[in-house]
Length: 480
Image (cartoon, rainbow, N blue to C red; front, side, top):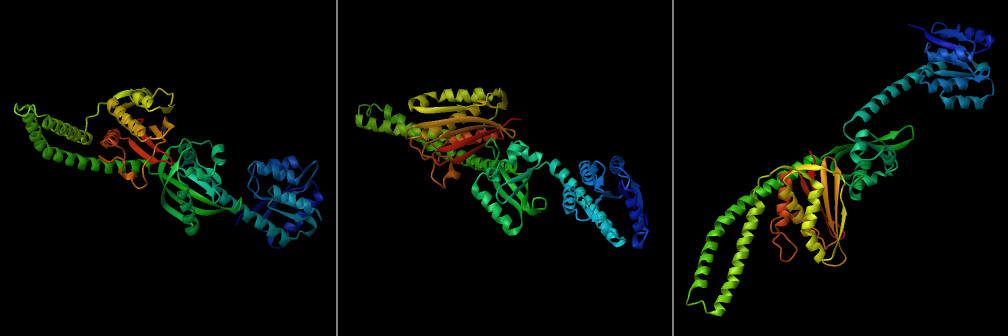
């Protein structure tokens, strides 16, 4: 078995002779190989070169101390154990030595072979354990930093202890901002955060907890959280290690599939409806024409008035049928590079008469960037006009405020339309894009249906959020 190399750093030769004598007796005689250096400079040089397995360092080394040597060695990343040798009664020195990183301390007058052997074995074992922990910590740190998915370390109070680069990019924070943020602000609703913490505290681990999270810019993500509890030994607190899986794209695809299926059914119904209603409508129209042109009936004012009422209702039904069919048709998309800010401005100009006529306060917060999207300009503009018109029609009492803003985040260009109108009754949110669904008078309930269809055809999405007062619509269009 190879002997453990021990270096004594002591400027007193008599102490070296005494120490050498101790190493020559008992069980330690064949286990250790002792060397000696008599000054601080040579000693720290040898320590930094890692020429020995363990070091015995006298506290008094000329103008320096053993604590100075330990401190310099620890700051230089030395992991080999260092044991301080002190005089009798130097308890304050002992405590100081342990605080800066010494593995142990021994009182010179009380050193014997067994005591020295035990101290050396414990110091070496401790160094081996610390080395393994450090290697494990480094591996975790590498995984933590290089992981492509956000990893968040927080606690019950919401304090954030650490987050990896992927997490900072995901939420849009700098590290100092994130560490000063409570993790409650990362959850879109307080209810989600409370349920997450309750499940984690009860079970000790959580898998696939679905919730919504929000970035610093207000971008909402659909996420799945996997988390477990662990004790932070350094700070002695219980922390949550949480991996955040972004399900936004998957949710978007699922929603898109559901809506495409819905549109497919609606289109099928619309075509069948058109076939069934066009024949009787044509017959009614023909009869109306004959009655209104019959010379015997032309001067019957009462009849002609009634015929006009029938004709007006006929035209309404005919137009409603055409609108319904149009809202369910797959219209071809004519892609062109379009300045999206200019498109938003054009849509606002188109509804300017409504804004002026109803004395609406229009607030705009549009991105200044000259960004171009590959879209069908006509379809997206019409979809935005439909959303804006819907918002205006939903405002009944003054002041009427319409807020239009834009956002560039996570590969999507978002157009946010917010009003302070009467909103929609709870439980009806899922019907908002259904054909003919409306809570307003004198509207056919097809504008939002057509708008959603156009946006989905561009691989985008429309999100509706009821507010305490009013509604918020978010049109998201892919930038690439």
